[in-house]
Length: 188
Image 1 (cartoon, rainbow, N blue to C red):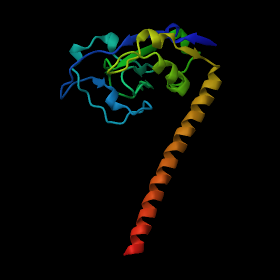
Image 2 (image 1 turned 60 degrees about the vertical axis):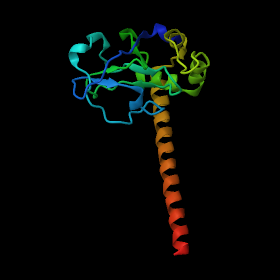
Image 3 (image 1 turned 30 degrees about the horizontal axis):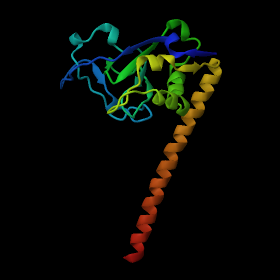
């Protein structure tokens, strides 16, 4: 099945807020993620709860899409995180309940992050100083939705590929350290 992203759920913008040193809600910003949508920093509640409307609170399975700048990625909000809202750097995609038995949120994030999808989205980005992908462009992205089992298989393979990449990087780092140590040992 192939369908536009906009027909799968609601797409809304994140909220503009000023973080404080202490709060009850996490304010997710693009700086908290790497280019693959993985959290790279520990999160601390930095917004006051009374300044946030309930409709902006993230739900498990919501997909965050970083639409501004060169670091465009999709990430799935995880339920074990504390209460959180997304900043205006993100669009929040909340799938319709009727689609949950047909589409895994992690698969949708993977599909959006796929180089083919990224090329389409970046090709339609606008802005001279900071490129931005509009809500309409994101909503018009055509999503291929295979059966659930195939989605799970794709996610498993993508996860294994990620693990392989991590191990290859570790091996390369260790190899470089070893070579440098052997070189220094040869002159001492």
